[in-house]
Image 1 (cartoon, rainbow, N blue to C red):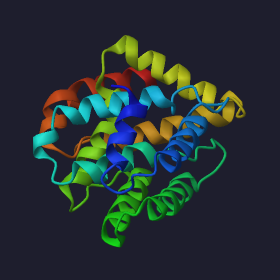
Image 2 (cartoon, one colour):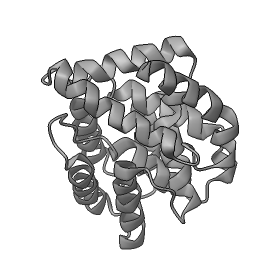
Image 3 (cartoon, rainbow, N blue to C red):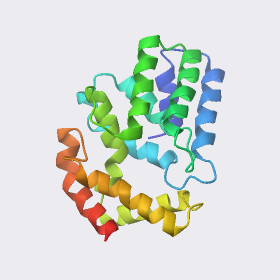
Image 4 (cartoon, rainbow, N blue to C red):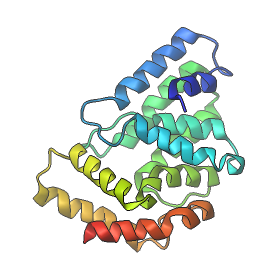
Length: 203
């Protein structure tokens, strides 16, 4: 999928000003191409869209979920605990200018914030977004190992003695969940492999 074309397609029902849409797209592109991003980049978005495309018929509002994908990691700083809040705020300002209504902006904002704690949501659309975001955990072991290396690079400011316990805590949290994935579709597709991958990483 060409992300730029898709972003334009997504914006066209709300705003015909191609210059404005171009500005918003370039902002997104620039953010996801920042120097320290080895995993949380445009490839991550492409992967999420390719996963969500397969369950499109199960998603109530694919437009909102698509905006959430584009903006959910737009602000990403490995040393910050407020990335999701800042990304939601960033999205809100852009989407207001694009002309989306308050209800949709509110929903997109909630979806972006949900990617912080990855708790099961009452909204099934949100659960599909969360599962697509974590789908890398259940990929084949080669892809998983590559992902762990990319994440380590993003956190390169931290030495191993700080990074490893923090990473282990995150992984243990996933293993303690009744299910890592929130939807039946993703559970069937990735749950078993994800647990194997995480156990492999913890060693």
